[in-house]
Amino acid sequence: MSTGFFGDIAKIEFEGPDSANPLAYRFYDKDEVLMGKRMEDHLRFSIAYWHSFAWPGGDPFGGQTFERPWFPKAGGTDTMELARLKADVAFEMFSALGTPFFCFHDADVRPEGETLKESISRLDEIADYFGGKMEETGVKLLWGTANLFSNRRYMAGAATNPDPDVFAYAAATVKSCIDVTKRLDGQNYVLWGGREGYETLLNTDLKREMEQAGRFLAMVVDYKHKIGFEGTILIEPKPQEPTKHQYDYDVATVYGFLRKFGLENEVKVNIEQGHAILAGHSFEHELAMANALGIFGSIDMNRNDYQSGWDTDQFPNNVPEMALAYYHVLQGGGFTTGGTNFDAKLRRQSLDPADLLHAHVGGMDCCARGLKAAARMVEDKALSGPLEERYAGWNSGEAKAMLSGNGTLEQISEHVLSNGIEPQPKSGRQEYLENIVNRYV
Image (cartoon, rainbow, N blue to C red):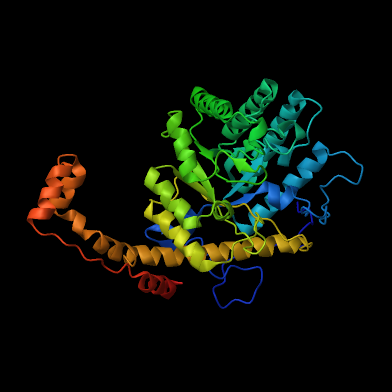
């Protein structure tokens, strides 16, 4: 039975690029085949429970603007009854949009208990409710995660906290969330260290905190194997905000951390476009880096307002950027357990229920356009062809010998001097390549 939150909602369908229907897909045709795979299976869309159903519409300078029937009344108490109503509306939206996956934090889906034991019990209860909804709708869980950053107990971090009791509390919380993720057949489990960092080095022991973080992650990996959870463990990099400096700054930093603790073959990354920008990178840089290091897992697809300078989590609409992002996803072999999660929220003035639908429809259409452009570029070798040409010199026997470990510095020097090698620079043709990309988008 419909909750009525979205009115007389019908399933949103693909109607083609000429459609004027605001609640129809113009480019996302889930059954369209690209590079031998259905578009739905390439993109693996997921909706973020927190931004879509738990976020109240606040910002650093103002409080709640959204009024949702599952929000507690002013001065009231959050209840499991409201949590079930929120779930009803959420799965109604998942079904209407036809998205195959969703994601959640524990704190998004159940009220906080008076004790951790009560909070875990409530999470287990709502997980059972989710199970029924998932069976009814066919929607699956892309990943679960624990909120280890909002509560004041985590103001100095979770795994990196100076108080061992907070470390232990966080560990128990993560265990419960992994248990639920496995029970719901989640395909990944994510750790985001929003408070794993520091505000000032005056009160921070970096070495100690990094060791704590490494031990925490190792225990998570051990527990995954112990219970037979077959999903992927993911870390989501972010350089700053809420902490001044976060230890999972970017993909390269995370990889160094994983190597230090021997976890580089156990853990991959969930890369967010907005976080890449905050780290001073492009989204495609972080994707290419993850592929190069062998730790690519999943993505959060959103964007930042480049004028604001902070993490605004807006729905994606820059198709050229998205085309380059999906180009690197496809070049890396595409998603396995990961997917495209909309870690994006409405603007605080977008008050209507329909705005949630419009935002996701628009984001999914833009992703589809980006994917289609990326697939054509891959098939035509539009970028890989010129790239192979640029590095073609390394295919010679002499060049290969320099990298094989057989050649010495003296031998290379003798080769250059005896053959009178005087290399001349060659154009990188950046503008030409940018024009190629623009022809596809």
